[in-house]
Image (tube, rainbow, N blue to C red):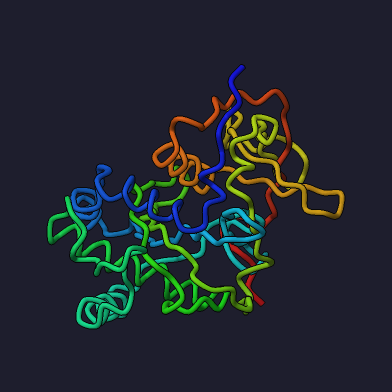
Length: 279
């Protein structure tokens, strides 16, 4: 069997530019998706921006992710920093971004100079990028001035929550001290190379806190099992799993493995999984 070439993942300067090129011309559904949600009956379907953070650590790139605390909904899940759109605030921040160009692409271009994007789509990219970075500042203390834009990924609508995620990809330019809010239990840094190992994957069986299979689910979900260094595992599944694996398939399709998990793991949901338990 031919050995998969993962050397690109360790090239500090080349990999972000490779990501930028691959995502710049990739199809994007932001304009039609946003329009359909704005026109949805009752206006109950929420929009959220998240940022897929790439950070260079120990000679390779890692995803910088958060584990959600018991204070918020989806407690215990691993996710990208981000949160719900606050339209007036995020529109104002997006306007500031347009005027000042304080956040640029990894190759130095202003966002509006990127090709293959119409003005409406560019406006939505600015809106959800500032939405996601505002939340990242609140959640983990990441300064918006410490990122370079790499691209946008297709939206992802959740199954059990009336919510659509708009993911943006950004490079963390310099190391920084995490400042965790009460919504975040910890930050995880997962090497991208870990996603290219078939042994990292498993089927995830969702259980309630009572130990029985959760009646909302009748199938097992693909997921990534991440040793936490203390003899336990964190489990990446659901929306974030699909966003990250979808990203890697877009930017490095020639190396991404077929996901055929040979084991099953359990993910026990907390009693307040859908609502959170704020003090």
